[in-house]
Length: 418
Image 1 (spheres, one colour):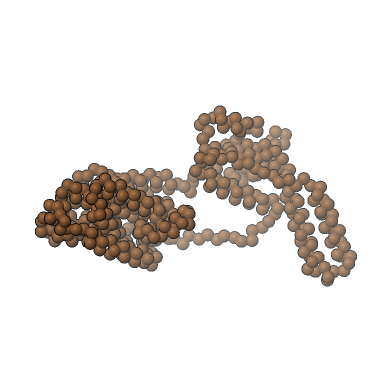
Image 2 (cartoon, helix red, strand yellow):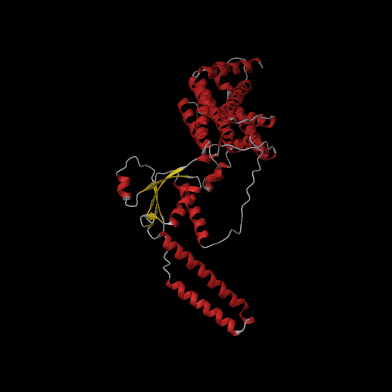
């Protein structure tokens, strides 16, 4: 036991002396959390600048319907609307304004009101005609001939009137910069507004309503979701990258050879690494949760199940690092391979963004990665306090910990250093 504690102390001191180790283990996660939480915590209030050129004028004044459409856009509180003069040449304007980057321009064409009203009337007439035909089809046999004739004459009159209308579709034009990362969101908002506006024009009523209830006992912020993912991701990187590099470095410097020559056992060496990574995992968790409280007013108090899952996660990823360090003898190669394993794990597991937004094949990959279950379990425990939903995470992470710890014991050849 004394030997294990001595090695644990030496590993901890070695980590403290390493500026790079401290930076990537603690400071880098803190910086990343501050950056992402600050940028995305206000997403619900974000406004997108959009330029509108209204060409639908009457006596040099925008028509009522075009103003109503712009007001519908404005009422969403998603847009900061700016206006371009009707005589503005859009292509020339973009070319001559270098600062006009990520442009979003909505053009309301001439004749917008007239065409929209005519199309609205035509659509309503078509609905009436279809209804009358359905009445004849279903109930015509129960009517006398005079009534049937009245209905048929009415259909013919409506069809004749409908043909006299100018029923061209009205098309608004949305110009977007191909490099605009918000383009998809903006298109979705404007499409929804246009659909609602169309329904209003033809007088449709809502049939299906949505009743949204918040089942959470407290309002969740973006940082609530980032915290567990970041904690899990950097416990993983500390284990895989940090331990792999340390083991390889100790091997190259001959430290492992000298340790093997002492009464220290192989199990003591492995346990000391596991203890050091467990301490680092709890330290990282404490710092991240404290930062969340001080900077973003996020109150998360770890309970015994979440602490247990953090312990299991630290053991899992530390043992993976020991396995890699035992296989790869060259330090530079070990560092490169550990990075090539850790970073895909980080970005494919959903720790930084929801798995649901990824393609199906990437979602399938994510769900076989240990980090996916680690951060999902932490989120359920730390944010939702839902231990039942974390059972799968406990089972998979415990199995991984046993498998990789067993591999670490088998791969670490203590006698080769004697």
